[in-house]
Length: 373
Image 1: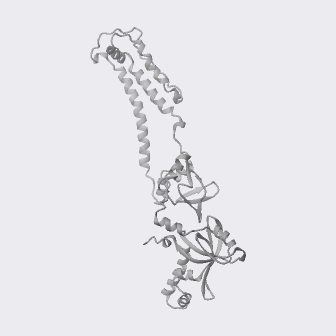
Image 2 (image 1 turned 45 degrees about the vertical axis):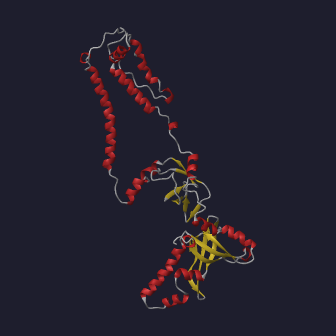
């Protein structure tokens, strides 16, 4: 269940079918785009991968209170452990301190460096241009774009022409000794910082419309036309309330239509009139703002499970349990009619006659498709 808002109103959203781009890792405040046609029942959008597109992003205020961990902790009435959170920060601080400590250790190693501790090197001719003093570390250059990442590597190349040797092997070993270690490490450290800082924001992949549309066409949303339930559903020939009202303009008598709708409001409560059950409801679907209908007595009798005579007998009875059972049956009728998976068989009359449509039957979609057989 999601909460959707355009800044003025808030509505609920329910994932009717699988949406790969939405998960518990989706940040609160994430921007989405809703594509028609949309089904909204009692203020709840029925969402699938075809009518919603995730753009991404978040909201700092909602991130503090709307993260899944925060919501779960609030529902469970538990506090989020702070020790683990601060230990994570301390570990990050230790890693930063370890890097500085490593540099200091390298500098101490440079001061204690003694060439006599290593094996003797072959005699080579070294250019007198090499300075025995250790150069001072150069200041860190300002951040540059990613296309100039080759610039910090140039100091390594400057050390090669300082050495003039006779053999290849002695050149490599002389290069290792003559080049100050602190200079190499300083260059490597600068390169590492450059690689971290010079990352361009444009290189971060963003969610595109094409990816969402391809996910919407995944196999989960494809309908198998050979499935028996799909065939049975197609054979119902369901219409909308608007289509039924349009067809009634061209008919001479009452015509029954099967419509998938829901009760928006109970216009008249359940009661007994002229020894018949009667109730008036307002039905609604995605095509109409509301159509007033009368529920036939036979439909109400089937839902309640009591005839009018039996209800009058219970009303005049002195048995308390029997009266309570009758009251529960009457209350359950409205609960049944509030379901969202009902198929209504409604008899419409010519539009000019201004006769209120009559509900002749009510069944759930599972009952009509015989899903339990």
